[in-house]
Length: 67
Image 1 (spheres, rainbow, N blue to C red):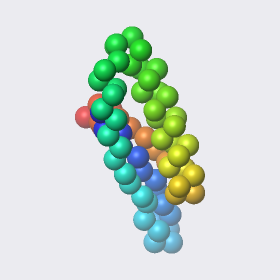
Image 2 (image 1 turned 135 degrees about the vertical axis):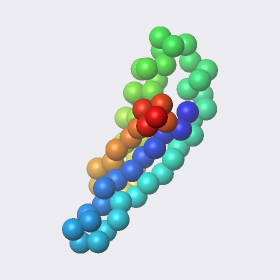
Image 3 (image 1 turned 30 degrees about the vertical axis):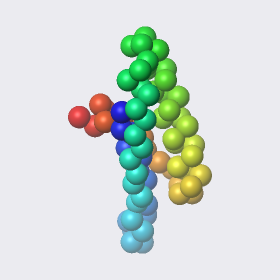
């Protein structure tokens, strides 16, 4: 499953946002009942990591949510 990570930047001063895609293939290996909790945990971890890297709030969406 691909997770899309992006930040808004600050368009009012010409600073573009950042974006990344993270592929975590192990998501498909989980039972459906455990899958939602695993996805939520992944999203929390990605949010914390990329917020730290980019020093701004980020948004996270799985490829399933983007469709």
